[in-house]
Image (cartoon, rainbow, N blue to C red; front, side):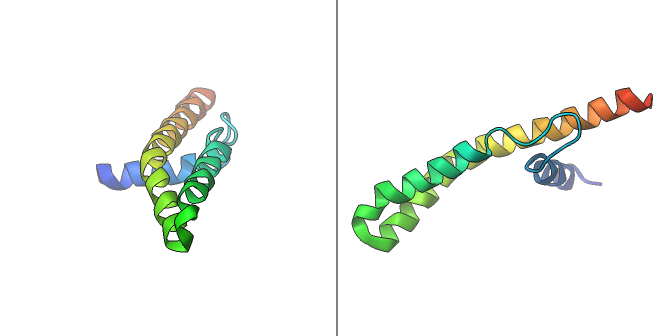
Length: 85
């Protein structure tokens, strides 16, 4: 498996509930910030709301995915230490 697909799969896994680490604690904050961006841009109509949401998503999604990756790696590490591999 290539490095890029490994990172993609870990980020995808880290966004969900994982054994040993639970749910991603940043999910409510990411949703809140995207909605806040939509409200901020919403003064200019629907297009402004979409642009505002996209702008906030561009800022906060990489931080969220970084946390998701770290959570997935930690879950794998805990799984291997528990199973003695």
